[in-house]
Image (cartoon, rainbow, N blue to C red; front, side, top):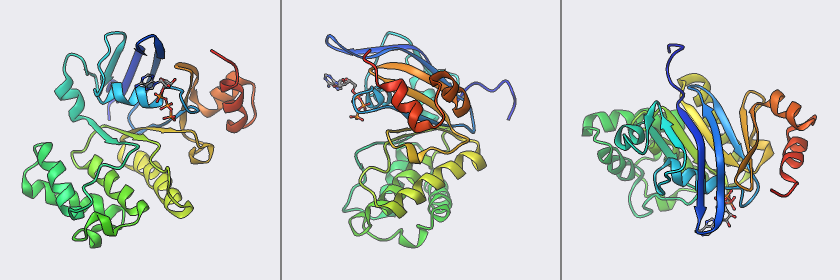
Length: 247
Ligand SMILES: Nc1ncnc2c1ncn2[C@@H]1O[C@H](COP(=O)(O)OP(=O)(O)OP(=O)(O)O)[C@@H](O)[C@H]1O
């Protein structure tokens, strides 16, 4: 990877309001290739709104979003081709098999059947799910469904993976497996990850943070920098200090 490759995600001066309710106010941050950035914010911080803008579910004329250097407002097709998303709400078709779900998604991204099947095998094998490919999604537990959703988000080899609270509702071993898998992926494949959560225990020491509260960025950067900004000793303390006061 060259040093002058653009950030996988660059968000600059992004604002968004629902009518008069300001949900994001001049939010700026970047995620470099191979970095896992945790978007940490309490309920109502603006995480889902931010994801809706990055995935172009909503459009905003205030501010800019670049994915791998492509402006999602001006070159949305190129930008979105570099994006993989795991939404908060599960979106697999329960009555289709794992393979059918993944093939369908791959065809939406323009992958040939052959290429799709190769990529499906690679991604499912990495998560120990290839043997389950002919089962209907309905037969899988919540953790395994999430694994399939992560595999699906990676089929077209995006440079940026967005995960919106992907462990909500999962048991402890499933959560742990997903947290560890995504961190390993970042390290090994060079993909950039933006992971929204309010769960401190999903954060690794090597992660970067963006702390969002009431629509504004209260702290960002490597963990030591954020601790320094907050004058805190632990991420938990920093989170409480940076998110306790009113906007
Ligand atoms: N459709 C909407 N209409 C009006 N206000 C909204 C709408 N969606 C979100 N909001 C408000 O915008 C702010 C940000 O909400 P958002 O859902 O982005 O936060 P969040 O960090 O994702 O929270 P959660 O963790 O609860 O999902 C909140 O004050 C919320 O009440």
